Length: 359
Image (cartoon, rainbow, N blue to C red):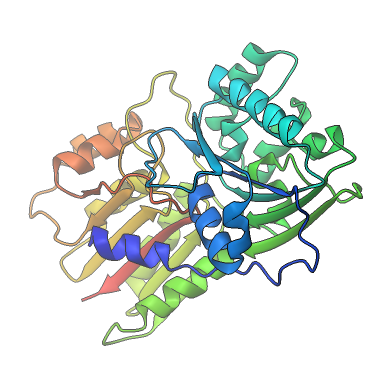
């Protein structure tokens, strides 16, 4: 199952458009985010000349890489927490740009960048504010707007720092809102009013949803009902999926970024998908399979991508489930019962997804 899950994610199509007529001699590549390596590899497949360009790739700690070309440097930073490493990496990017003196920077940007790179007047305050925002239950656009307000690079301020350099930005957008691509990574490198920036969306929530629908076509019976760009709460998503299970006979696909507000000072292990799966567990039977997974392979603060529930135990300990939900410790419960999926970072970041399959 994990192999199929990873293969499906790695085959998501990216649209980089056509190459520039004039690729500058001193043009460099900067790729940041959970999908930074994937985007860089795909970009170089489309435009092989960039394999020889100087490059800097910024990834979350724990995401392993194979061999990269000699012209590329790989750095690691923290996610989802902003840390001193995030500020150090930003200084490395400043140094990378100022050493190479490019006329143009090709930027490949994906989700997770907000925490990987940061620069502010008050680092400790920024770190504390980000921790508060992560538990606030705000949708990702509202959250990133607050991050932008407290940053010296977000919201186009990085590109504004270098007005003589053109920043050509390609975005793999995990934000399921109109113009969500403008807020990926709190967008340091593009702003509509800046003449030295451009932006192209190479994949988004719709790309991911359509790709998953194609992958579900081989199901032998029934059609697939689908819900795109879900951005409500996990509780609202629970009601949607439960209604479908009780009242519909079709399969179901939901993609999006649900929110959850965590009020406990010390929470357990889990994330949105494991929390949802555990909420639904008492209502499942052997007539359905449930997949609730994060496309990046890391659901919340757990080491799991989420859960797959294919065979429901005959006896469900509801008190134990309720306790795990109250403590936001869903991943611990699900892993103990063999429902968790541990894939590690997938290298992709395009929404969470829920699949209900009728057997």
